Length: 329
Image (cartoon, helix red, strand yellow):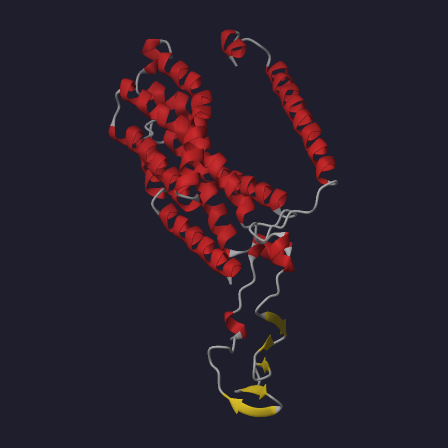
């Protein structure tokens, strides 16, 4: 990047070839590592994506309840030994009462606490077909959340030069643009904070932290035209970018099946790219051609857009609560 900046007359095809070669190098190394990991996994037992606390010892223990669902009928079998004899209970969705046999005698009693409503049954997302996993409410909420913040990230990256120029950075020889460029890789310093937040508070709070950082970055852009103050926004943006990608992508394996995980990551990037294409291009044209390069309105729209993302975070949080309850039942 520094070479390209110092040599503005460098031909665009050569620049494209340079970035393409870098892309091939990175993807080649990543593909090689993935192949090695895949070979290693072939020698290991498959990962249980439904319940990570479900171990072999738990499998060997007798279960108190065995549930089988067929159509709209749920049969619950509960067998245990007592001094008086053997008790067998079977409940059917079509039968209003349970049939109990105690010591060879039978009697009909109503047990609402044992009957299970088929309409209230819940299938863990990782156990659903791939298409239904990607259409689950939790994934769609996370996808919408990520799409907005990825579009916001792309907007900041592509418009910072013009935004700073409007504030007078050209008079300083693009000094503040250089500061922004140098601070962008500093986002790696945010990883320890990501780890602390996820371990202590969980993914739902981590998503709220993303919103807070997005709001903080937007407030700096909207409330101040001082270039020195914008440096604070650059630091916040570095952490914001780190949080968006690390927390969102690490959240996916917690509820998606391992065979759908790659598709889920791809759809997140796809949705973000589509939203960025639909919103950022027209917004930049209006800003540059009709507003004379004033980014106040565009930055205000992205700042306001962070507020609906709070509701998306709550949908994801409730989804985690339902999944946890289903795994523990």
